[in-house]
Length: 344
Image 1: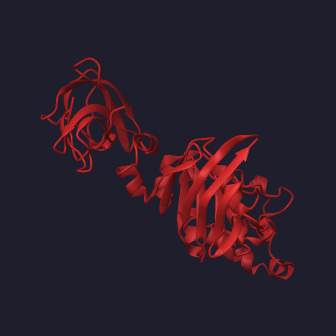
Image 2 (image 1 turned 60 degrees about the vertical axis):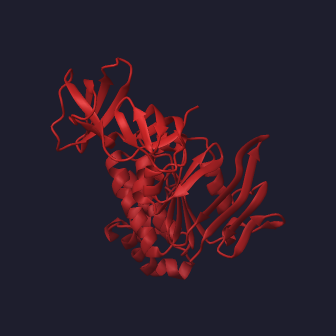
Image 3 (image 1 turned 120 degrees about the vertical axis):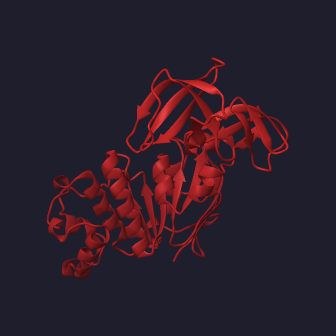
């Protein structure tokens, strides 16, 4: 059982700093998603933990052992860390069983029992063991890559955008299978991703990364419902942002009064609401004209322009609700609390 800890980790390439004093604790036997846009330093951080590169400053611990820091460098092969790259990187000339058993001692590999256990763990049928990688679907290939990473019983498994190349259906199913396999194996997991839904649905903890720094760490619920700042709020999920004047725990907006968190300071602010907080048909709110409706099956997004002619908001309705029609004029209200951030 190994906790991953980064303290003041800094890394630069060709004079450009990629990581700026990163501090992060990944709890043991939990899956932490490092969520951020491309180029924010996520993969660099993962490679430092794996031992593929060295930090310029700071310290990395696996459990109680310092593996990287001033005067310390434990080679990657001695860190007991499994690594799953974006494309799986299976050996094309080896079968599924040979790929999974590649890092095992020869006697264990030949016995095959461990390989079969791992295939079952990641949700693959034993009948696939003799197939070549090109005979598998993308999701199956990623599960084989995970099984191979788990074969030597690592204490930490690092996953670098492992589902990015899969279509939506495969991505969701493979993600659930991978999370379940990591939990069953008792491994500590770090998942790097730019996909907000993936991070929120799979991880026990989410670390939001921005420009080489950790902007916020918390449970998926905390990061979504109580973002540290407006940039995190806008990145983690769809948001409606309205100018407001805050006083006495209430923000006055074009959608009417909105209660906000008690911590909010008085004065000019920007109030953040999630689209599912907008209630189309709530007669307490102002009128708006329906400009566009996008149906996604489980829900639909309704684009509304308030009758001031300027403000545009997007409401999210469940798929079971009858949406208004394009061109309709409907009242729009707000349910729940908003989050107010200082005006720029």
